[in-house]
Image (cartoon, rainbow, N blue to C red; front, side, top):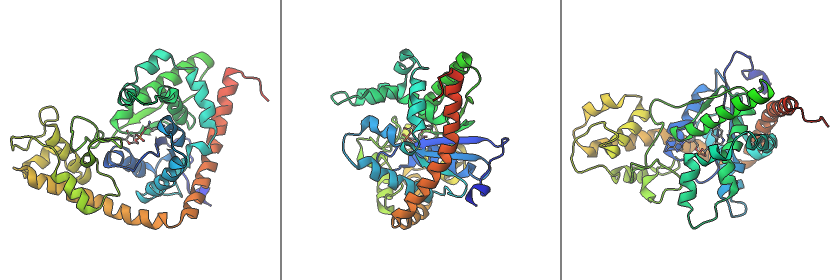
Length: 339
Ligand code: TYM
């Protein structure tokens, strides 16, 4: 029954995007990516993965990723992904990701991986810590995530553009070597909210690994904390409300967030403010209005873990039916000896 409701026509765009189960979901994740996943689900064929194997690149404690995975599943359904139409799955439940990941590692060069900004940033931040080889080869596994599903569109925040670019390069190289096998995907980023910045350090993107406790707004934050974080947001000393991301990154970030939350352009919003205080308050109120219904649904869903696990099994079955065929096609294109 469920399968009949899903969009399966060949003319319909296939969408794939994923998120790591590391830490709590924040406003950047939501405005940059997750919200777009929900918008597309009724007229496109959408697949969304909780990429637990990617999280292993920085995991050292037992059981943490599993718990984060179930919480993230609850969050994805709470923001509005409808299990009747959207395929939500866990990466490690679909072994084809690791299998195609190896093929991708053999199709990307050491030099290309060395140029990835995210690897350079993350490995620099972990200076005195263990830097896994997985952190370096990460984009190859991400390419497998995307190419396994013949995705046309990959809705992501701005920081993932480079990873989608390298996926395109890998797909084109593979197709050139072994014949047309993969669909070449495109990154899709939102007009507002593609790069939400840290409220305490508005020159860095909002991130789960932030060192400034008040810089990151989580979807599960209570209203009082959200107001506090926005009130303390770093702006600048002249009290002029202007949209100028280079000269005024803090104020522009607040305008961007308000714009993403309300749908009005930053240029229209600036007209309403002559001081920072009311802008901060309105941004906080708009964010609270977005997260309140999500939080309510989240707590309901977390109360029934069995149902969440069931939904993830349904998602894994659907995902595998596509992934198995793509892996087979890939092995056949290379000409590996069938078993
Ligand atoms: P991750 O888990 O870091 O983030 C999930 C999504 O949130 C977006 N995002 C942001 N958007 C705007 N402003 C921000 N401050 C912000 N921070 C995060 C990210 O762009 C992303 O879309 N490598 C990916 C996960 C991944 C993936 C994939 C994505 C693995 N395989 C295949 C797409 C397709 C990552 O670490 O995202």
